Image (tube, rainbow, N blue to C red; front, side, top):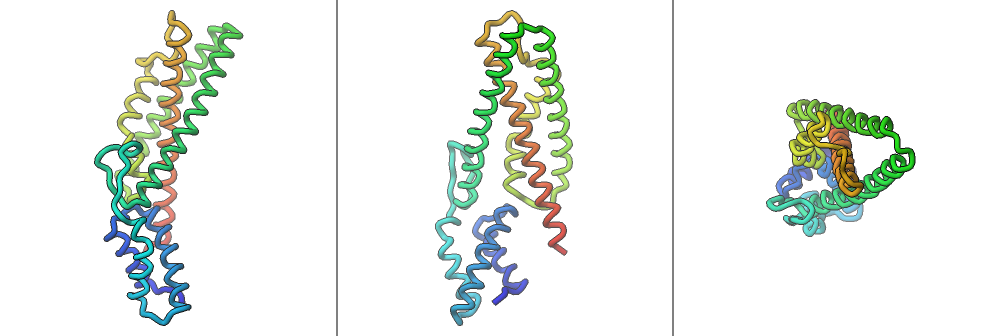
Length: 226
């Protein structure tokens, strides 16, 4: 039996009471729980309220409060399903970032060491500065847009959590206050400086992806809500 709009709203209200306040997670859970209830109503003649309680009982473990200090920091608490998603997303991104940053660092230093071209080096530094400034400006524009946002999402939470730190270092790199490849330094110091720069470029790109995901979610919900 297809659930009514009122019954869907009741599922959403129950999720909110259990701490599921992020719309991206909420949408997924509503779909899963609604499907389970619809299946149960076909096979069972129990009233909707009874089946709703039984289905939520199955989700009790996933909805219990949890935290993950290592990946999400102290003080953050949410239903386990949200904590797990945030922690797993962060692990995947850090793993991907470590691989990309390492490969790019090795490639730049190897090419520079082989060609010994000051022009090439200056070009790389200039390109990274431009990327940092453009990324910082895009992040700032995104932040101003998100101040008007009417929904909550895990994307928005993560964007806001690291916004100021990433913006600060992005501007420092862009205006040259943080040396990308300091002159008159040994290879190890240059490599460390380059790695730090690439990490922040990767983080800026990651935050812009979060903004885009939140923007798409808000656009999607604006078409579905009256």
